[in-house]
Amino acid sequence: MSYRDTVQYLYNLQKHGIKFGTENITRLAALLDNPHETFLSVHVAGTNGKGSTSAMIASVLQTAGFRTGLFTSPHLVSFTERIRVDSQEIEEHEVIDLTGEIRDIVAQCDDFSPTFFEIVTAIALLYFKRKQVDIAVLETGMGGRLDATNIIQPVVTVITSISYDHKEFLGDTLGEIAREKAGIIKSGVPVVSSRQEPEAEKVLKEKTQKEKAEISFYGHDFSSVLKQEEIGGIWFDYHQGEELSLNNLFVPLPGGHQMENASVAIKAVEFCSQHLSSLKTLGRENSHRFYSINHQSIREGLNAVRWPGRLQLFHGVPPVVLDGAHNPSAASVLARSLEKTFLKKYQSIILILGIMDDKDIRGIMEPLLPIASEIILTAPEYGRAAKPDKLDRIARSLGYSNLTVVPTVHQALDIAKKLAVSQGDDSLVVVTGSFYTIGEASEVLGQKGVLADLRE
Image (tube, rainbow, N blue to C red; front, side, top):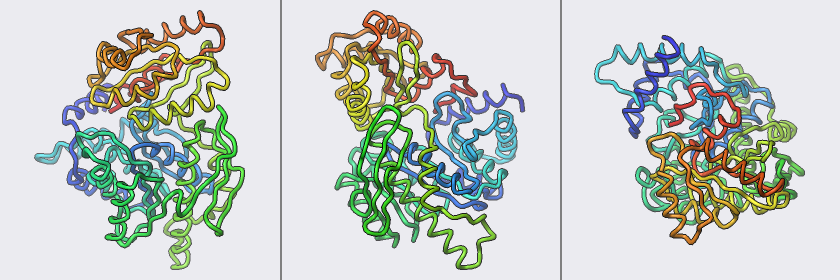
């Protein structure tokens, strides 16, 4: 199977759209001899923060000596970002080989049309098996209950912050959305949760009680104190009652919200450690390599984490920050972080916005537009993107007139650069609104892509 054939095959799968349910992936995994049963796993769902939290968990596990897989979505620049082992992305030829192998198996089956995400999930599971990972961290694509990743039996389940997103698929209320996320909770498997709104917290508690699973909430069962917040990252203290206290931890990701994500990651790793200890007690340590997840592993693992597209700073003239905020909650977090850290150094923000048409555009704009001196509205080259003229109408209805409308992200960055030069050396360009938008911006800024357009 050639590179071109691989691209075309994966593109064609997107015509099947989004299909919820685990029937297809269960069937596909069985045809591949259930690769997910050959390694331990951590399952992560949520609306915001699940990618960062997954990356932190994987980094700590890798630092502790485990051969660690990481499966996330979507990617920013390269398809290969989605599937990693010990921080190394899957290589292009491996994507081609695994895709061809799976395509041939699917072609032999009658009435079987897996979706793009189902095939990609199968590629990840088979890759992790072939690479003989000890443990893999898998992030859900959307929701949880009917997500393709929900065939795994994890050692710990993680639910990050739940807010409004994908209403057309997950529901109109926080309770309905939380029920979909809570669908990854398994019988007897411990759960770690970010701080949740009361409606979502109630759903998670009911689900864990039903499944007889222990649940630990940030802010109640464990907590943290922010010590310092800078453009280069954050320093914080982690506390878990009188049992555990870790001081002066550093995460090289800016934004105070990363403290909660890191704390959730620490608690999840603790449950992993307990599970591994039980395997050793039962005399089963030979089934997985056994290493100690100690405090030093946590400290070094958090220090080593890298996660692009979240307040990611590109140094240059002008400096550019990319952030994938694509719902109102994430936009509010971004606005807070910009005010709290970046506006200490930079005097003004030139904002580039490109948002998907099915998102809460007004809700995303409301926290971000007030902090911008100039606003550039654009659209990534993707069918679901809102037209820049629509963004312009909504922004004007909110009372803003400092607007420039351009058709492409590349043009938006060119105009932003000219504006920044005219304003002096103290301007910061911020690109946000969608992972598709910041993905295209990354390529304009020099990042080389592999199967870059398959960002679904």
